[in-house]
Length: 186
Image (cartoon, rainbow, N blue to C red):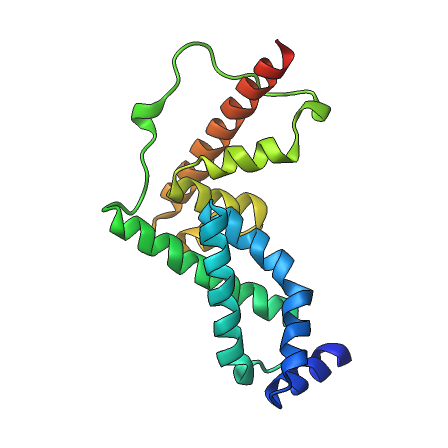
């Protein structure tokens, strides 16, 4: 564990309010971005961020320092976000999303776009419009870098379902970006 992490954790454990505020300021931005990508709305992301830091406050004594504090917080945040996504899927009465009926008609979307035409905001909008199962699998695999078997284990689905969800997410993102590019070009 880095000395700065160790000192900050010790201060937090000793109940120093300024220490937890410092921990929040250092990590809130990155964790909010994760929560936003997983939840899809700013309101849900804010709720998740609050839940993440409440949980971090309660569990800080279990932090052993075997990894960086940022890594520990990120894993904690990922677990909170996955619980949120799973509960939302269960409430909706489905464990995976099917896009088979949602296939676009006509020719397939172009596979490449000029690099300067794809704004980060457009990509975030495309990801936010994905169904929960696709978005979660895509974020875990393509953004977080997990293998399909890891994604499958986390989501409680088969490896094939993970692959299918990521593929469907990529297709929808390409289509969204191609339509956006065509609209901008007009």
